[in-house]
Length: 232
Image 1 (spheres, rainbow, N blue to C red):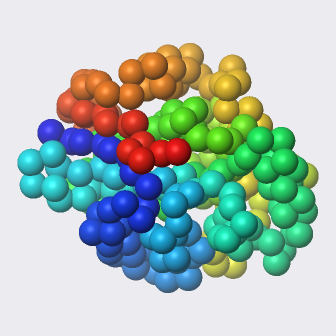
Image 2 (cartoon, one colour; image 1 turned 180 degrees about the horizontal axis):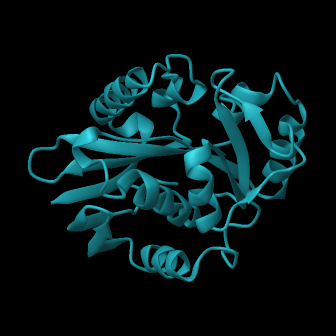
């Protein structure tokens, strides 16, 4: 059975190492080596929440994502990624920080063992939005590849057209495009699809639950364990 849990990065160094190795292997398959969300300084950041997908029996890690809150010590990966192209990202994040805090869903990946199950394209992003309710934030950012823009829109995010070329940047390579997306109010998911609204609210109301999920390759059970230990 697939198990999805959350924790502050410094609380589980071994799991963070498995996360880093799996993510790096996936990026190498696509010829990507320089990506800001793959930097490893986040493992010491108590403001980084890790979402880990693992086999509940073997503890093999199948994927994950991070929700990194803005702090004075570490910039958000999106700032490092596009700040040199458009400095307005710094002001936008600072404005949201002053409004009550902001964060970024980043480092999302899944292994080939679970490819086609919808874990990377549906579940991890949904969990990321769901757990923001536990955090001192009012908004979230995400830097999307073209294939994941629809994922962001499905969750209620909008393209931040004040940045770059109507929200578009060439990143992490000149032949790849990334889109800045933002959920301005984590409590307002009215732009999300009805199904995503239902699932996000369910995970927020019941962080511990086992659900029969359905992906392109069929049905499978997922046990969610989304209360973040030792937080705040």
